[in-house]
Length: 70
Picture 1 (tube, rainbow, N blue to C red):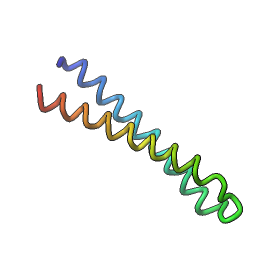
Picture 2: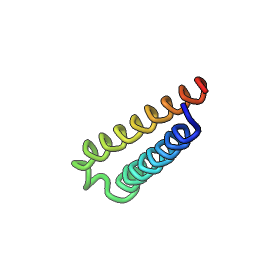
Picture 3: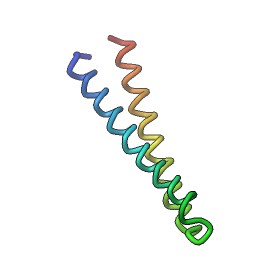
């Protein structure tokens, strides 16, 4: 992999981490501000948070594999 490829992967990891943090913040806001009345929002927000964290983990794993191969 080239340095450009690794930089691209680093950028993807940072973006995925930002998105995961935003989703986690939404989940936190639900817990802190809208429960118990907003209980019906739990599944959707929790799934979005899980998906975002999984996307970050996959991007991070690709970056680490690329760095190890370089």
